[in-house]
Image: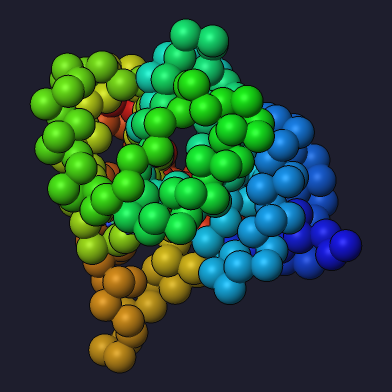
Amino acid sequence: MEDIRGTIKSELATGDLRAYIAGNAGSPHPYLETIRIDCLKHKWNFMLTTPDQAAFLYAHAKMINAQKILEIGTYFGHSTLALAAALPNSGRLISLEHNPKFVATAKGHMEAAGFSEQVEIRVGEAPLLLPMLELEHAADSFDLIFVDADKRHFHDYWEASLRLVRKGGVIIFDNALARGEILNEAPDAPDHIAAVRAFNNFVKSDPRVFSYIATLADGMLTAIKL
Ligand SMILES: C[S@@+](CC[C@H](N)C(=O)[O-])C[C@H]1O[C@@H](n2cnc3c(N)ncnc32)[C@H](O)[C@@H]1O
């Protein structure tokens, strides 16, 4: 079977170095590899988080003793499981996904990994689900939020995340380097590149957080709410 560890999405390290980094990442849960292999068959498997990203997410959740996590963008449930594995038994994770097929796949994986009680996957458009979530959950009640979905709603996701996450909590946005194209300011560059650049600039100057771009995979914008 093809070894895809770390071969997806990483723009910063290539070839042997990429495999080395992936091979040196601790695995938050043994079932992650099953999800990874299942995802191989899917045409959009480049969307899957890498092993070092899974380790990064798990480590941040563990470091802050996360009890309650929100994720936007479930796909096959790879990052979902990496984050859920860091929770104590009483901890909960809610993940939002608009593609019903991905929801069914991810739910199956959570069940097989033994996390169906702790992980709730909601189907729908995240911009519509978030206001409902904010009615159900108090402000400042989440410990960690991971956003890995459509870039055009990044500002909305950012503001909702800042309302939902507690002080000292962590907000992580994936793809901060726009697949290595973040510096491309050519007039014919795809629109989403300028959008991600504007978003990164906005976060950098946001006094409500301390933030930096962690240089793994495609760049993970990581912020601590002050
Ligand atoms: C990059 S993938 C997520 C990868 C996943 N975090 C992982 O570890 O493999 C992005 C996901 O966000 C979903 N998505 C995109 N736009 C969305 C929206 N507006 N609302 C909900 N889900 C959305 C896509 O269907 C896709 O499954």
